[in-house]
Each structure stands twice: as structure tokens, then as C-alpha cells.
Length: 125
Length: 125
Image (cartoon, rainbow over all chains, first blue to last red; front, side, top):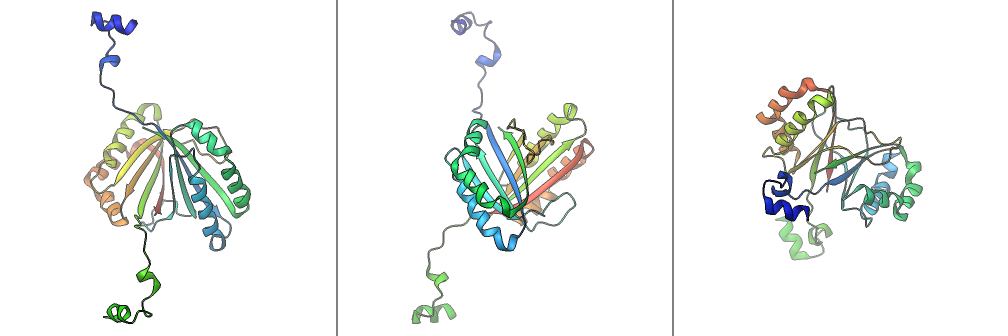
């Protein structure tokens, strides 16, 4: 009703209602780095597990990587063994992923293999 | 010549030459986190700069984000102010980006605004 009135009267329509809004697709990026106790022994198994949890239904997409051979610089941390990126449409979808049985099994199966885990969750548009 | 001989004799063809190989698209992910000295004052300007360098020609794609409101956990570092992801087809393309005038100007214009920069370069398939 307010919108109809606004359209009718013209000047009462706030600019944000009339301006063309670009289609925004906010996305949550869940960026995880793993440092393993025995990378030579366990790298493949943990990477395999990462690929399984990346395919959990509530995740939008994922990627698993290892440190790249870019030139060494003080600002680059290349000491980790596995980089796992899991993208979600929303924090709610991320929360569902955290409790998914496949994710819980991954943690139970592999948590003794890692020395440290560092996570950065960020929101992009 | 070796290949021709192998094909002719059949048994000499190594399996990896005959098996169907999936099309792999290795990608370099350049993941940067910025901690600003004065985030309230400088966040917008540095984010704008990040969007400009993300569009440098040698980059494949990019995204700029800010810490997400996922549940706080010890393993999550949410102390940074900006997350910049720039994807490249190769380390060579990344190296071109590093020396691009737009990237050099970004550093010159904004380096005094950040307290710390942390980078993770990783290769995914």
C-alpha cells in the first residue's frame, strides 16, 4: 500500500526503491589451514577427508590445496600443509555443515593427525 | 619416435599414455588478510583498492570480504579487517600481477594504513 501510494505520488518513493539494485550474492568463505604432525604419513588421508567434507550438501563449493611455490616473502605463511576452502550461501548453511555427520566423523577420524588448525571465516558479496 | 614404437608394439605403451586423464585446472589461490591501523577510517578505501587490484588482467577472479559472524571458536581468527582472495591460472600470472603498476600503486597508496598483512598462497586442482 505504501509502495502503491509512493508510485502514485512519485516524489514520495525513496530512491532505494526505484534504483536498480545489482543482484548481490553474499557468500560465506570458510578458509581452513591444517598443520599436520606427520605430513609425509598423513597428508593424503586428511586431504581425502577434506574432499569428502567439501561435498557435504549444505556447502556451495569447496577446494583443497597445498602451499604453492611462489617466491618466499616474510608476509607469506607457507608452513601449513593443507588449505581447505568451503563456501556457503549463509552462516546458517555453515552451521548445518559443522554438525553434519560426515564433518563430525572427519574430525573424529583425523583430529589426532593435526598439530594446529587455523580458520578464517569471511563474508564476500 | 619412442611413442610411435610403443603404439606399434602395444605392450610397450605405458598405462598413463592410454588412460583417459581428467581435465585438471590447477589454480593458484593468493589469500591475503589485512589488519588495519585505523579500520574505522580506512576500511572503505583499502577495500576499494582491493577491488581494483583484483581486476588486474593477469588475475582469473577475486573476492573481497570482511570477518563473518560465525560462532566464535579458539581456532578462528577474526581479528583481521579485510580478506582478499585473488585467483590465478599459474604462478607466472601471479608474478605478473605482483609487478603490475596497479598493484604497485595500491601498495604505495595504502601500505601505511595496514598494521599487518598475512598471505597464504596455495595451489588447488
